[in-house]
Length: 251
Ligand SMILES: [Zn+2]
Image (cartoon, rainbow, N blue to C red):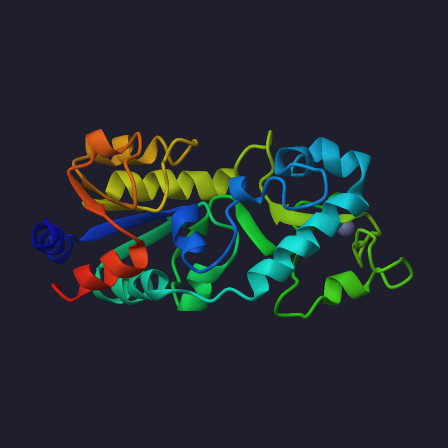
């Protein structure tokens, strides 16, 4: 099976890799669902919503700072690193991720579409296109809120409105530009690798069938069966940090 997938990758002109919580979990990032119960008495579903932010922005920011602190300690694993190297050897390579932790870029991947945003960015709640990179600027945006308490939601240095994490919350649509680019990549693909995601959440749930309808083959890399398994042309069982480097050795 591994050899046949390696041959398919070697022959592919356009590869799309779709990643989810599984690959981050292998780097020690607590998965979103798994975080339930770890933090006070709130559930993520009650904090990662526009309504929660409107009701109590300071609380939402406290939760995101707590998540950032956990993610800050995580490093890309061998699976992330293999995907970054794969990008260099495939003519057209697109990485679609549901993860907000930024580990793919940290590993060196460049053509990355972050479907659910990035936890290290914030953006103005009043000016959608005004974004801030809080990791590289070491919290510069948050320092703009120095008149407030450190636990408060930061303010936009330009207009004074509250900043919000630049992630997609429950009940919010995906960024249209990101979604369109993801769909275009799926239609263009010869091969789709679906890694560490059960692929049940839109749009990731739709991407493999869009790619298959356009002639692509689908490879699933996961530690367990998912709703995608029966549709996949190839199924590789195991952690991505083991399976992907093993695949690379056959290329
Ligand atoms: Zn603003």
